Length: 238
Image 1 (spheres, rainbow, N blue to C red):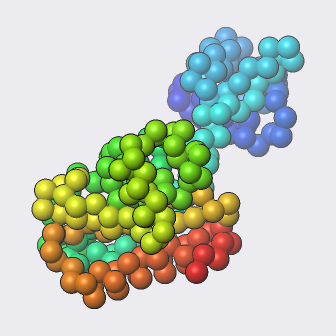
Image 2: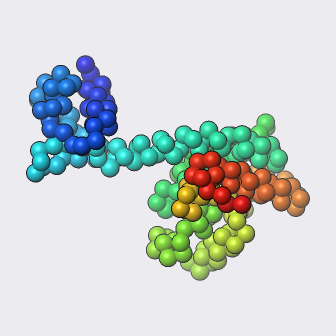
Image 3: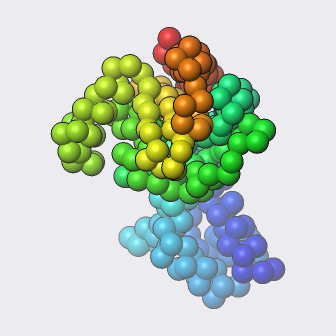
């Protein structure tokens, strides 16, 4: 059995048992050599996937394992539910639709769809950008409690005004701040606590959207975000 497979077997075992267990039990149940078990556990402790309870001489899942599980349960349903409304939004203005979430002072893109003929942008899956420089980041920051927002980013007065305005109207915009010749609009998806779980955004060529088209686009994004909030978190936002 390879070290990778053995590592995954240990993690799977720890995830199916409600209490921390001893290394001896792991050795016995997984039929692993004692030296191998301790070596792998040591590596996983260093990486944060396993925590060693020294006084009890037992091991349990660590914070990194929890964060991975949390990311999966959050991102996968979000990605699945976002594709259809993002594609419709992108098609309304011949642009690109994006799903992203906050990660500290950055946003990370989870999904991207493009209307036919839309150019490839820097906002591809996995890319991280400074939150306050994007429409998606601004609307998610705007949904945080003001004290938390200020503590996290210490925004300049002009940035604070942008976030206050975004909170008031329910969407945020950016104009050629991420990509030359492109503008964006974004709305937040709220979780059961009213906090920003993610953001839906559309980026499109400057001047593409008339006033009526922009109004329809924002309405579609808001309706889509509200629907996703209700389906994923049981939260009625409209």
